[in-house]
Length: 115
Length: 119
Image (cartoon, helix red, strand yellow):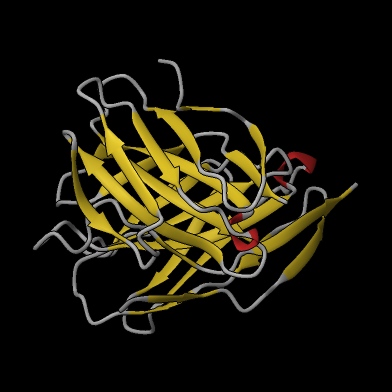
């Protein structure tokens, strides 16, 4: 099976602009989670989608939003970009485990630089 | 809220030797899952090993094994016969089972340990 794909891989934006990142999960995986990775804050959970519904959200401002399509592909959007949004954004495709947990497989990430 | 702590920012080991990375966590949950992920310089996050809290037996995957001490809330990773390709940042992560909608798809990560394997 093909792995998780994320596009674009690299992105440079200017403060105040908005950006959309895309994630295609492993075929058959219906849950997609997004994470932000920065040197200062480490890996932080943004949100999770399952069957086109957001089921969980991390502690990020409303400028961060997402959605999931019927084919399980997901997008996240960041509006009014700030310098602090510069980060590696990782998408994870989940395989459910017995007992109610998930095993997450990550994409290569999108490196966003805000200038 | 759960927290995960990796107290070793950096570690180094000689090729073919064994190294242990430490992880402690804090939770009031009785059932949960613990993971070790590896992030090499390519930044691709790779699942190394998984441990279910309800299992007393420690998980093993080839050269990788864990020492899971539930009472002590400790979850260390042992890498045997270290190889140059093991050079990476290693993250310990915690996940609660899905219950009540507050934990869906959410991994809580430690700060990471940079492991360098020297030839």
